[in-house]
Length: 383
Image 1: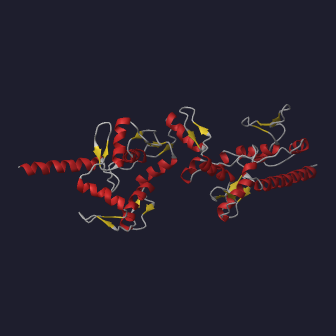
Image 2: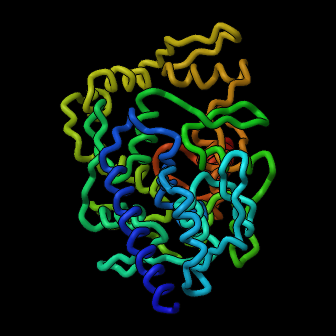
Image 3: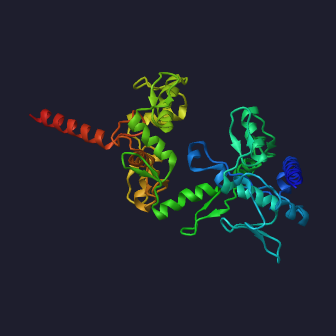
């Protein structure tokens, strides 16, 4: 009797592996337009948010309804380890719509193959291992997708721009950049998002949830913000300038710094005869000449204030309209100027809020300092 049970168990194991292999082969033949609801994508997250997402805690399944009643009965005779034991007594099948219900969490699935995959979320079983890096997965299809990170294979191609992806779910998300589709909406404020994870992050602005904590006591709504903040403790500056080897905590700071070098290297054939300043474009020279002539061709229709730059007028108009187009993704505060938003963002990252940036804007600390110097200079001139 034991030999017969052992043979049945081995027969079922082979059938299970064959079934899973066939399922994976079918996955390769799926075209984006031919997908059905039985194909559920594996969620992929941004690199800087990886710690928030556990691939195996949100299992997705590629299943069929081909499992028959005979297979259902055969499964009840399987005798395996405690972690993989699924019996007729531990799970029930509803008679009306022929669905299978997990007694661990109540989840209802359509077939036993689905239930097998689902049970691994409870048992933690990961029978499929990568030979390159020893990572293990609960599904063969997940392993196959992972192997592409080693081989560099990207079989899913966008017909609009020829970008390639290792997963069809990544291609689907990419397609939204062409279609403009935003299927995920916030119930609180009706804002829409192209990514479900972006909606999850946005909801924290309503709930105030800050699940990512630093040992210093500060909390953050995003893991990426916590990572940047931790660099203020460790001193890590992973973003380095290729021209002068200066390093920065944030990539945005490096981008701002790089403008200095790009401006220096750019050819500047247009020179000002008044002060010998050179420019790469004649339009920039014309704008510069207004600093000598005092010309201010842009006038505010509300108050009559005049400006030498159209951009300055545009910024000024926000003082009348109240428009604040620069939004903080952390707390939803809005600002009329990009420079104000940059200063505000340091309150989230933990970076010194009074660091003087060479170009782009002058901080309040710098303004105060130069105002004091100018005041004493004027006082001395009258003595």
